[in-house]
Length: 271
Image (cartoon, rainbow, N blue to C red):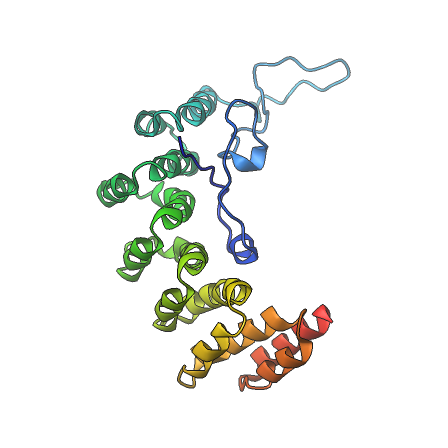
């Protein structure tokens, strides 16, 4: 059975190239690979060891938090074998963030089995409090299966605004692995400068590894403007270590002073 484990998405992590990894749910995963723990006491049922202070009652987990944590553990164990039932269990989690992360985790497992069903589930989902956390977890998994469809979803404005940049970066990563030229066409259509910044670097850095000269041809065909400037900066950064002089030449094409200076500093740091 194909399965994936989603690590909570942060822009800086995605830009660095974090990928989906397969879990081993037969053992205890590292804490950062699972939905967030709740309550300051990681095991409210245990007794303090000798010499250890009794936990303050104000920080001990409440019954509601204990119940939420139990549900999280149940969902994690069920997610790879029966993600649909796992999602139903996760709906009972009271804390919106934890509910969203846990549902996103289960939906990510489901995406590896039936991406169409997950898209339909997202379309019908109206849990506004949890939705941003769901999307942060599930979009990278969906992009792993069908980046073109995720790109269309994002272009139609169906994602929550606060997750757009991370979702765009994840989608570009997966799409570039399959077809960098068509991924570049999508990125070139961006009007939002924030999304452009999130997308151009992963596009160029991965594209260079596949076809070193191809990004240059794409950049040269772009009209003057912010897309071309950001693409030049990303290409210069991608070449900085292996071809510093060529990187400097691309940096020299950047007319925006702050971006040009930042790019020169990146090249110098790589030398």
